[in-house]
Structures are given as structure tokens and as C-alpha cells.
Length: 234
Image (cartoon, rainbow, N blue to C red; front, side, top):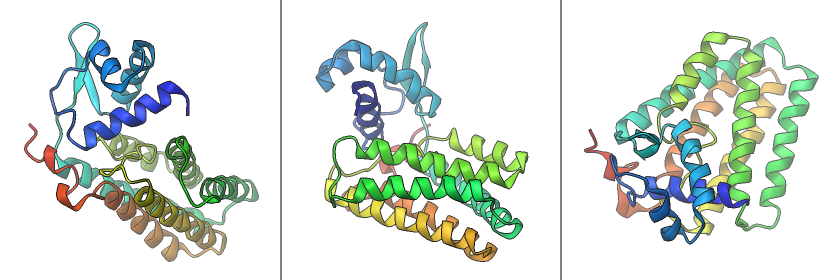
């Protein structure tokens, strides 16, 4: 994992775990010291996290943690699952092209390679996130319904909603592996349903898939509901 990418993942999970609280400023020097890195990767990570909706501009050039509630993220994630499920139904019932199936299966092979050693390496979380985002985008674009894409993009602006925003409330690599491995198994089932023209099944599987993402963010029972520390955010 490149250093900027590693910093993005670490800061994302610090926000999820409540180590960085809503409204807190994100000073580059302090974060660099805290993470044991130079200021450059932190400087590169902050705009990327702002694009994900986790940070907002503060002052002339700085950022602070965006205030949001657990319910905001849950609502957006569940709405996104409905939109993506409908897109998958459309693609399955219309009939997926050979090019689309090849691209989806390339995602499957990439994910299979991540899990081949039965453990997660340092860069695997980011590799999975990038593959996951590509998988979701392929199906949404194949639906050829611009309104679905537009509404999904709006949902993805809510923190911890976008397919690429993989984050865990626990630092346990074993738990991360179990959840990602299960989620990738769902990818296989979704592609199978689309290839078979099973619209109902493809839609159901996509909605269930979003629930897996929701659960991945509540791995630590002591934390309670998703981002419980955000429940009282303004």
C-alpha cells in the first residue's frame, strides 16, 4: 500500500472509531506525528477524505471532521442498496453483455486473489475497496439509467456509504478477513444471478450485500450501533 493510501485508510477508520470527533480540526503536522509519517501523505489524504464526505473545509486551507449521525449513514446505505438492487435487476432482465460479464468476472478474480492466502496483507483492504467500487460502478453503468446513477452518487457523499469507503470498527485482521471474504462471496452470487437473467435474485442479493457493509462497520460489540459515537452529532 502506498503511504498516501495507507494514511487515507487509517484516518478513515479513526473517524469511524471516534478517535477523531465531529468538528475536530485536522492539522497536518499533528496528524503526521500521530501517524508516524511525514506531512506530505497527510496533505494528500485530506482532500481525498473530503471527497468521500468525511471532512469539510475549515478556514482557508484546512479541514475538519464532518458532523453526521449514525442514522444518516444507515439511511444512505440502505437507499443505495435499493438503487443498486434495481440496477442489477434491470441488467439481469435485459441481459448482460459479454463485455460486462468479462469485466465483472475480472473483479471476481481480483478479489479471489486477495483472499487466496487466507489472511489480509497490509494493502489488501485498499485493494478490495478499489475492486468493490469498480464492481458496483460496472453494474450501475450497465443499467443505463442516469437517474439511478445520479441518486446513487448523492448517497455516496454521505460518510461510510460509498463502496470504496471500506472501514472497520475493529482492528482485528481476522474479523476483517471474514467479512470481506463473505462479501466477496456475495459478488460471485450476484454475477451468477445476472448471468442467469435472474432479476429478482440479483436485486435481493444486492440489498443483502449492503447489509454486509453495514455489519462490517460494527465489528466491535462494545461500540454498539454503527458509529455510535456519532449519534449525537449535529
